[in-house]
Image (cartoon, rainbow, N blue to C red; front, top):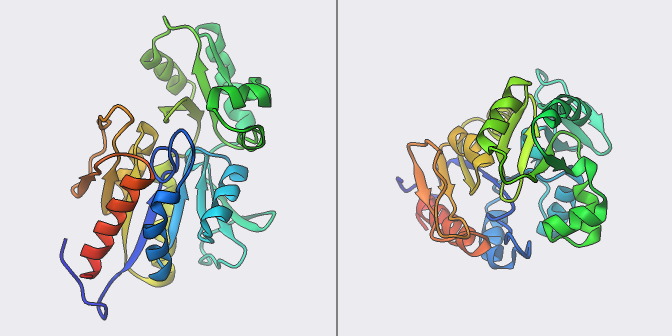
Length: 279
């Protein structure tokens, strides 16, 4: 990538997945990414969290990460802008608590209603059918975090319980019912109307409307990140726990990180920023 002087350096936007990318996929720790996070903050680069996590979960991590940028929840279902973020006049948002929200996906009750038809052919359980204790068990989360994960607004994580069920056929049937079906780090996800890429494109358009040209970077590791990685100028693909990279993302500027989780995230981001700014 061409280097730029500080005087001419362009504006950047960074979009990132959480589990297995910025966060360790087992401990949910991000301490190894602190050097890059501090550097991003010093450069005043908006860091947009994009996850299958709920708004309640992402509020928890945004506070710990000291981030006040907009964020995208539940595989692109909703885009949440802090109240002080003034949207362009041509965007009509809804007020929810302390946010101005753009709803991209369909509400969870509609997703569950459509998904119910899949029960006739497939044996699966979703978070909506689990107690908080069960969610804690299947995710490895503490009970307090499992409670936050249960507060779904757009997306239903599910587990196929019968090993004989064909996941590809399951997703085809879900699509026939008007549902998106993608695999995240641990679960399949059912949602409708939006995806990470669509939400990222909306956020990019808003920032460009407000502040002019931006160069966009995204980091992710799972199939539900593909649309996001394809929507940006530069994509970073993280390695899975088995050392393999998922197939799928098509981007003319694709970097394959050496590893996964916060250490690999930190190294990839610092390398990109130092190269970009000629530091």
